[in-house]
Length: 135
Image (cartoon, rainbow, N blue to C red; front, side, top):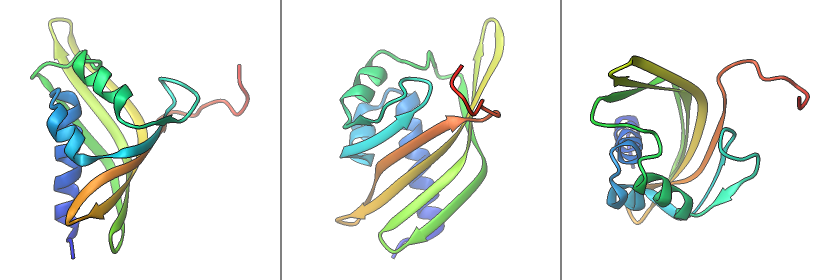
């Protein structure tokens, strides 16, 4: 059985792979049938890894080695071979223009298969009060 620290370590490794363009680690830590909602990309669910491989390949976040991410108010709900992690994700990027921060709320569902954790679902939402009605 996994302990909480193992799950958090896994999640940090998975997230770091996205920003360091480490496609091998991303693939190993992400289920092939992953589903996700990213409000800032499209108002529809995306399925599979292909979209993210393209984004990783083209350094979508504009990150270099001079970045950090923080998980604010992290919460772990662990149910056997399934875990739900939720937090506010804060990305900080240092550039010649100074520091840039971006935040969003995020939940990830993890499943342990064959002794290894994988992300199977991601849901992101704005970290500010969004209007109830579409503008």
